Image (cartoon, rainbow, N blue to C red):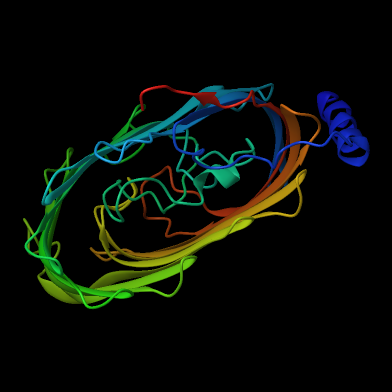
Length: 415
């Protein structure tokens, strides 16, 4: 048993019990407009994998988070970063690093709204909880918005994997042209790629585009109709999957705090080799609910559609549900919860992968700039043995504990 864990556990629990210094609420997600928020974190992580017996490993991580929202109304800019390094003493495990950066730049002209976003990451395995995607590092509450890019732009990685370092990158542009006071022309285009550093996965690229009209019905209700196109190509085989579809979306602003949207329609899928994948029609779309108050924020989203196969298979039909909740109990105590369920049916077909994970984190401020956290994450998956070799099968429990140092937010002038 690693002796550092009991010592770190004792220090954190002692602080949780006796720290009485009044402090502002624990910060999470992007900060107030114009403020640059950053934090450094030291974590101790224990992985208990129960597949084929109990396999216990200990990991030490050092990570940094940063978030920024500009104050500009004409050129809004947002940044979210999480990255660090991981070390383990286990002889059969790998030291690694993780990096995750998301940027968004907007331009507000007379009749035009233009937004360009980019998301790039380097991860040792498929992402799960937190802004970094690495369970146990203490950044669960930073990812409750599920990133800055629209649904389906970032290459899907819902099928969990074992150690398989990969680079993911996606860039997206969104255009809105206001035809009049109630009607807008909408357009979107994106490009994404997924590359496995050690070749332990299926490299691929994806493209998507959409064009539609949005109509503002009244102060609370909006309806939109759009055409959606997507294309997936796999480097090794050259196999291509393409889809065309139509979607009707309805958005409802229930109150200043709560908003919902739902959009579905038919999706026609075909491929470059009809003997491997014949043309088919299916239902695709997504639905979501968001709630934001002073002490509580929550996101719930369901997505259904053709995906790239997560580097495990050449395409899949994926149904996924994501949930995130954050709540500040007081000036010192904050809790966050995140969870996901995904079912991916391979298109060839070969089989069905069912993956699920959930994480909970409790944070406590010790003083003005320091805090500690305890977290628990569960990851489980059942996948066909015929999938690519890096697929994970079984159940894993991840326990995290750590300290965070977060200086006072820096106000950036002229933003």
